[in-house]
Image (cartoon, rainbow, N blue to C red):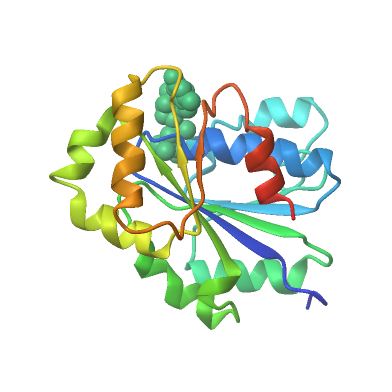
Length: 201
Ligand SMILES: Nc1nc2c(ncn2[C@@H]2O[C@H](COP(=O)(O)OP(=O)(O)O)[C@@H](O)[C@H]2O)c(=O)[nH]1
Ligand SMILES: [Mg+2]
């Protein structure tokens, strides 16, 4: 069992919002900081990691990015987290990208059964301002429940989204008060310095 439980960073947001892109940038950041991390994804293919190519580069799928373990959700989330906690000493972070349409609330009991409280879980909600109308109407209840559990919001794709959509997205988050820090960026280019500081504390 690890002495200090690794921090969990959970990337939530709807399909196509940029979770995988964010996950990969976060792994790079943490690897550069010499943090030992594990990632949990539904399917390794979803993350675009080519196993054969990774092996050619000298990595094992279980040893990505300098000591990063990758688990696919073949069994339950609870079993996967417990496996990581018992098998890997000195893990600093567990990064988890659930599938796009899953309600984040449904994942909390599994993490709580592994000894995490909801305060322990760094849930970053990634908001795609290109979809602001969809979020406001069809996905509104999922948005509200997702934001209720989020610890930070990233408004992504500011390179592509019109300014008014970015403002509207921020307005929707602010309707819930000013509890949540909001970071605006173009994740595909890289994480902003402010967000990096927020993640690695
Ligand atoms: N223009 C732009 N495209 C992005 C950005 N972040 C992600 N994307 C693209 O959006 C698409 C979905 O991203 P992905 O990370 O797979 O989203 P996921 O479904 O939430 O995991 C991909 O084609 C990404 O290249 C961004 O900041 N700007
Ligand atoms: Mg994805």
